[in-house]
Amino acid sequence: MLPLLNDAADAATAVVLATSEDAPNTEGLAEWLRGFFGPLFLVIVSIVAIFFLFTREITRFAQFIILAIFIGIVFYVPGIIETIAVAIARAMGVETPE
Image (cartoon, rainbow, N blue to C red; front, side, top):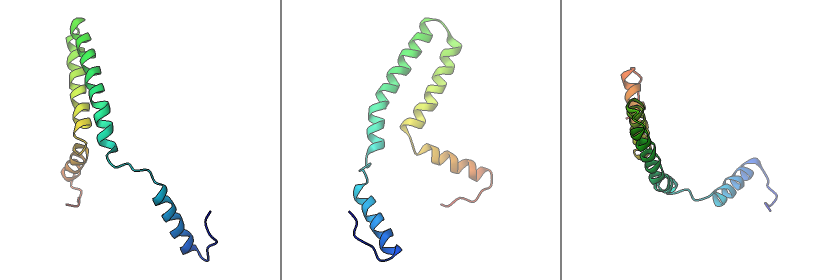
């Protein structure tokens, strides 16, 4: 239980301290998720691609592979989104911080 507080500054400090102590540790969460869902993504892509090849749907196979490559790049190289966004902004003439 929080002690009685004299003013709003003490209340704000108490709230910040309470939330920083109770916050979950999310360091390495992105790497863990990438390590868990990465192989699952590759297995699903492989199964669907083999299905399209065996049913001789070459156009759908090509479309699926292009989409899978795009999603894989975004998934395995997460910094690419920021790089592309900055490049598009600079191409449009928007000032971006270095």
